[in-house]
Length: 404
View 1: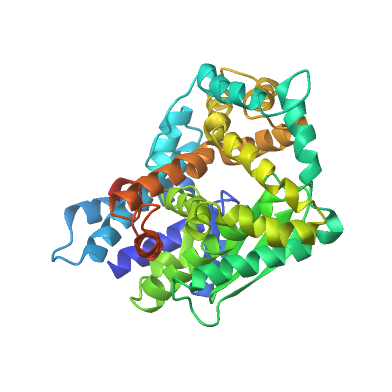
View 2: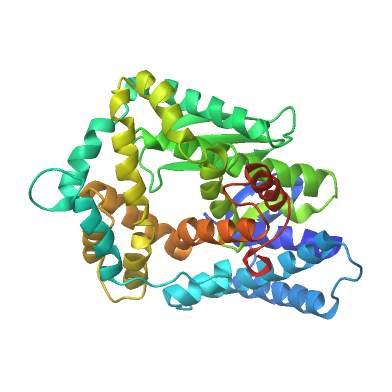
């Protein structure tokens, strides 16, 4: 499969010349990138070659019993099929939100009507004091837990150090792995991991909007340990270096790989901080560093637990907006009403939807599918060692949604 894998990498680079967001990471031969940049291949030509590779893979299923070989074959096939769908979209083909998520990410998120979220909002009504609409009351409550800008770096470094320590207790990481943190502005996302290869990442944190204390652990785990940084580093170690599989030296963002990447990054938070351990660490370490009252940590954690029940509330406005059933302003209003976002945060989220479209399913559905997969293999909350073991296997393999 090496020739097909090399062709796949070059096609991803070629698509990247048409779609600036498509190549999320690349650390393969630099001359392949140079070649792609030197000659912008037409979309129909890229698509035709992708179809040929798909036909070749379908005609030659792998033999033997090595599970990784079979997963590799399936990975290349499904990634190429996703690429064809993305190429069709770039050429002007219109897909519904669910059609797009299935074609690109190999999964379709469940639908929830307003009443589903209203039941959670009704619970929050009883725990958030004050009068008037719930969203501004929640925002007013959360404003008491903003990390001051001058304390942000110290809080993030402490969170990263703890996430790294906990991850290293269970996973064998390359000894020279590392990353740096930058604080940026004017982005549609709150945090991003740019994997550079050589077990090194650049993690950017967007400071456009206030950063609440819970985001320290969220971002440190999701972007770093045991999230994206570890995921990419282990793929590089086990599949690129140890097995010589070049297709894992590139990451096509709009592809099934992203559902596993985002799902494991989100689920990794509770793997690293099971039960009440997260709140205890935040109370004892992060609250003092942020200059916040540790006595309020449990109360904030209770509210955050209820807010997590609104995780799918971001999908419905994205579905309606991208399907042309609601306007941009109506999508933002839904996020304020049912996701309890401040208006400026809802506007940022709509910017994200404009840029990344159905990608939003990878965070919530991805997390749920990853949890179900790991728990089905014995990695339940009461078996933390097994949970880490299955988590490590998943982020070191080419397994994709259809194989979970």
